Image (cartoon, rainbow, N blue to C red; front, side):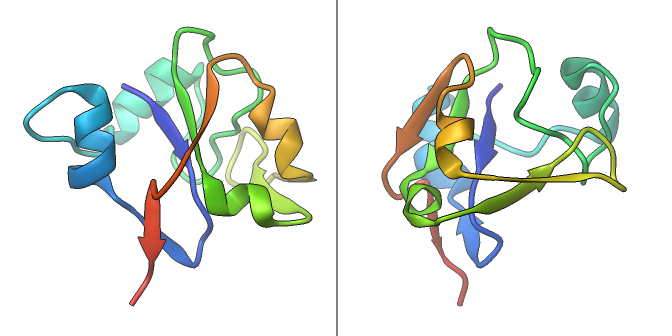
Length: 105
């Protein structure tokens, strides 16, 4: 399991890059229940990269790092955090990954 940060204008390459990095035959998104369990109670649509378990890899698409600012989940669906992408890149387990996402067509 890993969490990924990509631009809203792109599509996460789940069955390409993510699957290969996880070393599995097939990858899929976590269920709402599994998301809440692994994130400490955060719901899909509000998960923040800040404060997640240190053993959970954080993969950030390289395109995110080209932005001046990004908006990420703030821990619940009604909260968001505006920050520089560099703030996400320093969370434990963070790694910038080239081509983690593709332009949405």
